[in-house]
Image (cartoon, rainbow, N blue to C red; front, side):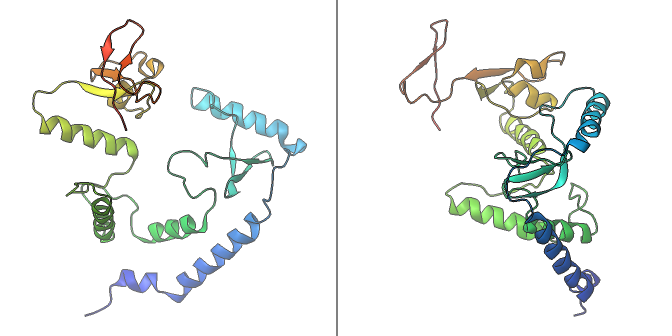
Length: 236
């Protein structure tokens, strides 16, 4: 059986050497980030202008005046003004490995070499199969009764597909239960589930949602709202 050309590319000595060189270069430079550092005064004016211009272009200010330089070291991150700060939320969301991790560098190289990084409904590469199998195995090992896995491109899309599955499973259902003060996403449907009225301002109501309090260890038997009405309290 002939070797696939894709496998020939992945094992090409030039690719393997390039991986080593990029990994070494990343480590050599990120090791310079060893602690917090004040901003470079010579960059202050330009940095402030970039922040202002970017906020104008996106029609809203950034939550933090934060623009990374593109390099970090674990919890440390260099900003475009030359400062180095601790980032204990590590970019928030999916960045569990921290800033500039070499595993993500090599994963990015593999993805860039794999024809297209987009794995959608119309196209999947062969590496989708072991990922799906691994996720199902992990779910089973954790005691979850999951028989299927559907890969999506983001957490919001995963939630949207889950909503479709739930409503198709229960025809005639129209409402959702969600925890108070929770965040679900910023799509039209997920904005309704997210318990932040400002996220829904000006949007049509796409999904009616009833909010319930999260389990309160100080009152484990019942949760009572400010009107005195009894409401179910869901434990995790």
